[in-house]
Image 1 (tube, rainbow, N blue to C red):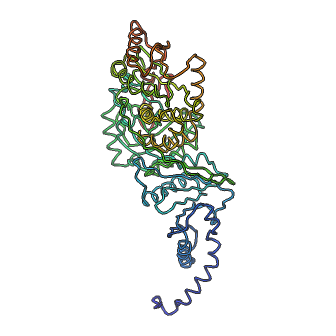
Image 2: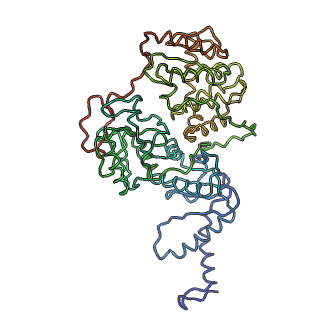
Image 3: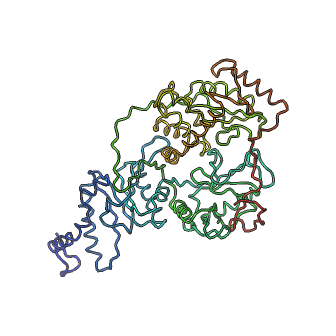
Length: 559
């Protein structure tokens, strides 16, 4: 019973209830109809949390609180998923002219995301969208469900917003040890990575995105590169700024990479101790790219990668899925390619090695597996490790023609995608270990994604590229080029451009045959024409305000 604590003139319980009933008349139109909820994939079940934003005066605050409370009760009673909307979104989200982006939280360790993980992911996505200026959106997620759906108007830039959503957003400042990568004054044995290159995940990260002050991250025009080029400014927190100054002072002339999700965004070297704790990431970004990257960095990284499941545009519905056969357990390689040997993409060994072994393989080919797991390990130990030979893999798809499947070219596409993340050789080791006697279906999408997870790749990025068939055209083109050059089967090895024949990959003398050919070519051989320089001719400068005393760039120097 209401005690009228505010005075005798305040309303009684009956009066309050009558007022609530009057307000509910205006609330009904704000509650989504059952059909709209069902079209969005929302399940019936436990309560939801609903955020309401409105511009109201103080006089309307009390009835609004009462109405909002009843909206939560009314909506929560029959709904299982939670829904969040942007400030500019209509109360009842139209389902006919919006695009839905369906994603799944995927743990690299196989651990199921918790309700807290889902909540944090949604919070970060909302922060990213709002920070990037996207006001019209809806996000739904089931209770403790790894499936998250983002709805945006069909008129929005769907591709850019998808990239904004799917990016894990892990920022790292990775030191490039001078013993390997040299300094500004002396080249190292490895080439300094260029912006856009994948960074070896084993390299030490000195600072991370959590060390930055979100308020200092912004996208601005890069006046040094023209009005169409943008960059991202950033600044460390006060404590980390001092730490960064000390660290940079101890590594003058050395390189480090500013890395997002394993990919270098900028690779400067340190001219002098960096004071003030501020810097920039430049790379000829467009306005949209810089704005969205800044939004990702401000919001922080997702707890787990988001893997794209589907993008449904107006009028499209998800295709019904039929039960798929259980995927066999992924086998762990018994033979692994050493990780302490220089590599770049599909090349293993010193780029300036005097002998090049061009190896044409099909990842379903059992003889190729024998070569990779038996002979190749001997070649690595006796020739590649010492800088005498480099091995270069090429695709030559033949098994698919026999089986009528597409596993060989899918595996080749996946291996190239892994190369983007500096994981080609680790990924290939798993492919060889999981052959199934050249049977169709052995390298299914699920199998390749699981291999990517076990090989330590960014699974979200890998899956996006795999679903897009990123390198299928290149795989087919390389296979066709090999056929035109007279290659008829796999494995085929060229030693400094000359086809090696007269032996079988599964025979005991295969290593001896290759070794003899290598020794013949090493006698008076000059470095292969395909050798690459070990360092950039011009180091990448650190732009102001990152190092205010940077000297004028040499002609041809790249940013």
